[in-house]
Every structure is written in structure tokens, then in C-alpha cells.
Length: 350
Image 1 (cartoon, rainbow, N blue to C red):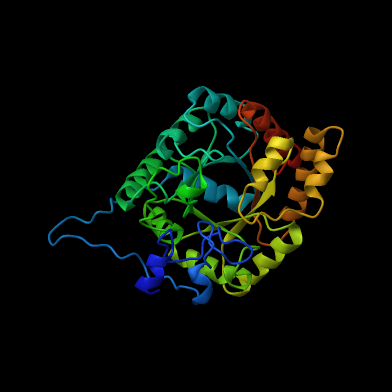
Image 2 (cartoon, one colour):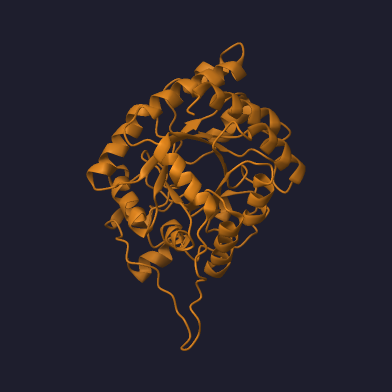
């Protein structure tokens, strides 16, 4: 990776491309082509760190996360259901309400950015609030808002809290969210952060987007994330079970030994459909949205469609769970949490 190419990426990524490449190959931030499309896949070669002579290593000694060990043991036993956590940002009461609904009905919640909200409780504090309700947390962890020192501190806090996993993403650029006035950080990218998270004692997951350019090189990029320390891949919406199966097979043929958790799109009203459609390069199964939104009862039809797709995905060799992915409009967070819980109830993976 050349310095010129690193500087040309708005996210200063070393191990690109991210999942924000548009279908025409352009960057999510500007109409220019993604710089990584013209480069070979960047091989994992570690994180460069500068330490003053005689100074202590800036990385703290890892504290093995008890939550990580519990989740690894569970994944060895059966498939799991992870649900996106729908609570309102900066709202402890909403967090408690949604956690109460989902506790005991899903294996963990993926607690990352809530919709387009950019201002959130710190990851370790949010995880503490959710797990206080008895609901295991798989923390979504982005590089947009923190430099490497802040990332290391949060990873230590998450290990102390005992989250079951850390999902490392580079993150959307600030220009694409609700706070374009905020300066983007991107001191590291998802691959580098995966290495930090693994060193901090976490079960580490990363995402990959099989339908996003360069499609043919996505499996190879995932392999480098595995070399950095990732053990689980959340497979972004790719159009259904067949494309996911093809991606998993391609990655495994290259030598990937990771566990795969594909995303199931959750649509139960127009607001949840609009949220999913706002995702970059979203690919849903043909007719999925029309089937749900045209139904007399979109809530019931959305649950049925998600259960049907979830069961198909769970039949794929290498898949060890599914992620119920999505959200809805303000004020309906608890209602959406109930939809997630009912889908998990019907799947009955336990």
C-alpha cells in the first residue's frame, strides 16, 4: 500500500476497500473511483506503532473476556441468533426497555451505531447498561470517532465489562451521517482494529459485503482480516441464501476457517424498509420488500419472511448463526425489539 493511495482514501484505510463502495465503483464520500479498485489486495503485515525509547508499550496487558469464552463455547455447540439492538441513542430508559424484551430470547445483541445517530454512549458504558439487564452484548466498534489510543482504552473497558464479542468496522464517513460537522478520525481501519481487539482478549468479528465492488476480491480481503485476528464474519445483505453460500464457499476455498453469521433484513413497516434502503449497496432477495409492504399485515409478513430466510441461511455449511439486521423509526424501538424477539422465538435455534 503506497502513501499516496493511503492519503487518497477519505478514510485513510490501509486494508481497503471498505463496504461503502458504490455499485459503479465510486467512493461513498465522493464521485471519484475507490482507490483500492486499482490496487491488489493488501496483505496483512501488522500495525505500525511508534513508541518513545524507554517508554512502556502503549498496549495494556490483555484481560481475557469471560464473555468471549462463553460465546466461543456456545458457537461450538449450536447456531446462534444475534439481533441488532434498536434502542434510542443516549436513552438509558429505552436501552433498559429493549433489553428487557430481548433478554433470554436472543443469544446476543449487536450494539453499534443506532441508525444515523452519531452521538452515542461510549461502547463500554452502553454495553454495561445492556448487560445489566441480563442481555449479552456483541459490541459494534467503529474507527470513525476515536484515535488508536481511545480505541485501545475502550477495548480494555469492553473486556472488563465482559462483552461476548467485538465487531470491528471502519465505519461510515461523518459526511454521510447526521453530524457532518464532526471531524472524521480513521486513525486505524477495521483490519487493524481487529488485531487490537484480539490482543485485548476479545472474540473478534468483522463484516464483509459480497455484493459490493470489487466482488471477486471480497473473499481475499476477508482472509486478510482473519490473519489479523478475526474469528467471525458477519456477511452483509447479499441478495439471499445462494449468494451468501457462494461467498462462504469462495472464502473457505482460499483458506478461511472463520465462522459466518449472515445478516437477515428485518422489515415490519415502512420505516424499517426505508432504513434498510439507506444502507450503501444493499441487496435484498428479489421481491422481499414488495412481499412484506403489500401484505395486509406487514408486521406478521415481515416476521414470516425473516424466519423463512433465516432458516435457509442456517442450512449453509460454515454458517454458525444469523444476525437479525435493521431498525425502525423514532418511538417504535420497543415494538421493533418485540419483532426481533418473535423471529428468534420462531427460529428456535436452542
